[in-house]
Image (cartoon, rainbow, N blue to C red):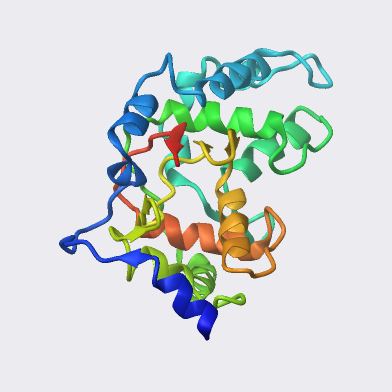
Length: 250
């Protein structure tokens, strides 16, 4: 209990009006926001370039590439705005990373690449980047409702030694200060993101795992059904926010 009280003492209340969904970029300082908005300075753009090289590389069993099917990357504009979604093949939720990975293994007959690998991160960033400026528009089919509810329960469930939920920070305290940072709504319209704390690019699930560890809870595996359901729920919270990938965050 003392640990919880000490943690909450760091929160300084600031007058913020209740608002609808706000991107994490709205909580950035001017310098970090400028870094994100400048494609020549945004470090996440290195992954876009790397993703383009992989996208064009002929490495499939029949010397095919992503471009062999999809043409120029711009043909995928809008694709990322509809993920995650229900997947009939598995009977579960599939996100953009999962869809890209399946294309590589089933269509190109390549070996699977692990979650958070440079290849999968780069391709995911490239595809998401094509939709920059478009609103997130995930629709939840009736068969996906149980997964949405599972994600909602995860979001509001207290966990870890600090006994905190996602909602404790990103709903109840969004816009307030925690030490030197402003707590955001935890929206994920900018992912994959380049995070200054990591000095690296990371996926939504890496952020989920980091948050679990921050409240001293055991994280789930990246790509787990728990994180996929959580991703579905969090995406619906930010429906209508514009894609910013690759975003820059603290």
